[in-house]
Structures are given as C-alpha cells and as structure tokens.
Image 1: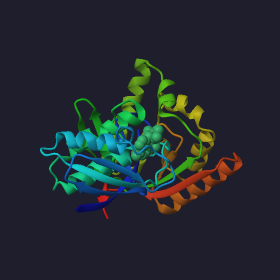
Image 2: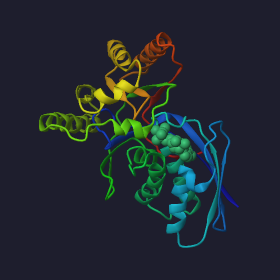
Image 3: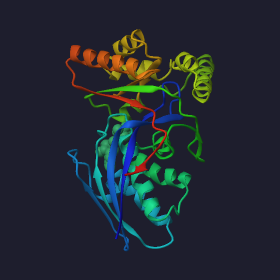
Length: 305
Ligand code: ADP
C-alpha cells in the first residue's frame, strides 16, 4: 500500500482589486492530509478534526475533486483520505480549496505525476463548485502552483503564475460566519465604465507591482471601489482594521476571499507583527473572538511532508 502525507496552504483570493482573478498562497495556516492508494474504485474519507464536515465523497470537496481525477485515470483506482483540517471552513482563507487541491496533488504524487498541474486545478475546481456553487480557481491555483497566481480565465482555464513579492502578510479571522453565497448575492451586477477604468488600472498596476517586487506600486494599487464597499458591511471592524494597519506601516490590504478574514501586506516582519497587535486590540474592543496569523507568501503550494 502506498501512502503519502501532505500539507495544503491557506490562500487569499482577490487581493483587493483582483476579484476572481488573483490569489496567493500563505505559509500559515496549512491543512494536513494523508492519502493511501487503493487498487479498487473506492473512496474513503475520514476527518481527524473537530469541524464535523461530511465524509460522504459526493459531499466533501476533497471527495468530488478525487472522483473527477479517478474518472480521468486510465485504470480503476481508489483512495483512503484522512484530513486534519487546520484552516477553519468558511474563513475566507481557502479552507475548501486546501482540501480539494491537497487531495488531487497527493493523489497525483501516488500516481507518479500522471496529470499536469493544470489538470489538477480543473479536478479541484469541482470542490469549489460544491462549496460555493461556482467553479473558480482563485484559491485552487495558488494552492497548487504556490506564490501569487493570475487567473486570466476560468473557462477555458488560463493560469499565469506571477513572481512572489518579498512581503509579510498579517491575517485576522474574526470568528463570525459569512456565507460565500450571501457575499456573492450582494454584489452589484453592473458597474459604470468610469469605475471599470479605475479598477482595471489598479489590477494592472498590482500585477506590475507584484512582478517587479515594488512595494510602492503594490501599496498604491490595493484599492477597490466596487466590491469592498459592499462586502465590508458584513465584517464588523473592517474600516478600523484597515485604518490602524496603515497607521502602523502596512502597505494595504482588504477582505480575504469573501471574508470574514482580512489580510494586510507589510514589508517587514516587525511591521506585520505591529499590524497583528492592532488587529487583536480592535476585536477585543468589539468583543469578537479573533484568530491572527503572520506569514510570508508561500512560494510552494501543496507540499509533501
Ligand atoms: P472557505 O473560503 O474557507 O473555503 P467556503 O465557504 O468557500 O469557505 O467553503 C467551506 C464550505 O465547504 C463549507 O460549507 C463546508 O461545509 C464545505 N466543505 C465540504 N468539504 C469540505 C472540506 N473537506 N474542507 C472544507 N470545507 C468543506
């Protein structure tokens, strides 16, 4: 029997102005998974964590991603999957993506890299469809490729891995629940040309800033007048977190995925830790429990342990 252990990173989708087209992998937190290759078409899913997620393959994001992979493989195969979820589901930190991406990358290693990374992203996107109703790759792509990824198009899938800027990321996850479906339902259906021009100027500049590892350009382009003003209403303390993070030296940041987590970029660990202190203090003021992380951008996606 062949068994493999992997870690799958949390991911921050959107990166403020890159709604549905940008995402990055973090060094912390990471899910842990163990996969065993079975020689019959069977899928067993077990959870070692406290989240009570479904273990029926069709209802678990790792399950549907693996079913897609098993269907595409040349021979009948199966897997036993043991998940230790560290990234809380519904955090906006790509918890569902970590399970789906982790499962297919581990399976592919057991199959001696039979599939390409691009095919693995497509299998894992079935997991995102199960979790949120849409097959998007802005968490899956960085979870598999690592670093920062631009998803120029989901259908057909076109992933452009970008350079990894030397930045620190502070994340706060206030322990409130936001349903991805709700966070999507409140979005405007149309935007004005004036706003669109401003917005694609920012996205283009952010991609340039990331590619050139230029903190000044990155700071200037982390702006969003379309999604953020609507979604921030779902996150208590959002404006205060942003304001006080900038005051202590952060470059900028915003909502991670559809929230409730908020991320901030900083050029040094010292500043990133000051930002973390502010975040902790703010949620103490709001009397809301919150979890924080200080991390680098992970150059690696899912990795073997
Ligand atoms: P996140 O942004 O943290 O991924 P989502 O709301 O997009 O949050 O995804 C979490 C949803 O996916 C939850 O409804 C959860 O029940 C469901 N789910 C099913 N299987 C898994 C899994 N293995 N890991 C995480 N979430 C899962």
